[in-house]
Image 1 (cartoon, rainbow, N blue to C red):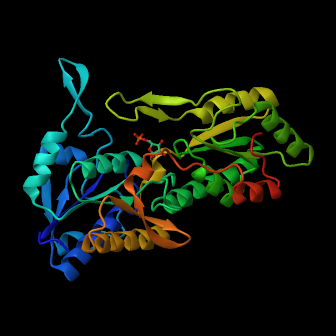
Image 2 (cartoon, rainbow, N blue to C red):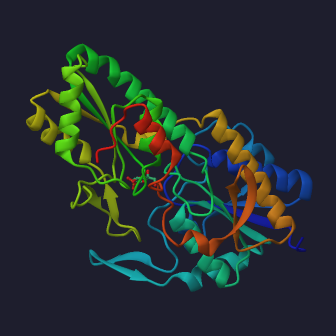
Length: 363
Ligand code: F6P
């Protein structure tokens, strides 16, 4: 353990249920076991660049286990190595890393705990190369971080998406309609696959398997011939047609990863309605999947990861994130995360399971 008596913690990127559970676990263990002072960085790397910190006491983190979001705030655009600034309305990017490193140095910390997805952890890797002792904790509803089998936030998002699918089921049945449920997941189909199976989706479309509208329409027609006059389609926001492209909802210029996906559910809805003649409605689960309290699974996972992060600080295992492999906690070098998202492999057992129960995967 270093002689320094203080650590800092930040949450970056999109929020998700369970971040507060990590902040709580890190802070409580650091105070109780190591007698450290804990500093919270406000709004992710924005706070590092703008020098915005607050002390986190034991009382500050009591009662936040069940709270969604992050008490520290977060930012999806602040990147010390590519910091967006607007001059006379024109967007530019500057290297603010010297300022960030100076502010971190002034804090005199033994370690900066970075809770985030691939973007946040990629930046953390850069800061580590620049001399900052870092421990990473992977977070995202998308479950697509390389080096870990599971991220907290995912189970909560799947639970919410499944509830949405369950709810549209009854209205689809009553009206004999096609109901399309668009779920998040970025470029990976984990949320769609899990919630689609859990919610009994008849058709599940994920980015990893480009779909054919005609095949989906055929599935709908065959179901109707068998007396099943409704169909439930679960579509990942990153799904795309064979030979086609993803549907983009907006471009956030300030962001290092500017493309925001969304809207595929509506595009597909029109195509399916005209191909089948069956009335079709689309529901977008959107940010509901990121809100509210974490499930008990995510609370337990987040607590374990936060506790493990302090173990890594104790043993100076820096430049790594805590991952899950084969159900055990493992150290994963931060640079692994930067190698791109962890998508659904084409031979994943859940794809075979879905097909085995008659679910159509769009191909
Ligand atoms: O990475 C989490 C996530 O919710 C993705 O599933 C989604 O594509 C994206 O963030 C949405 O971003 P924003 O919050 O900027 O709309």
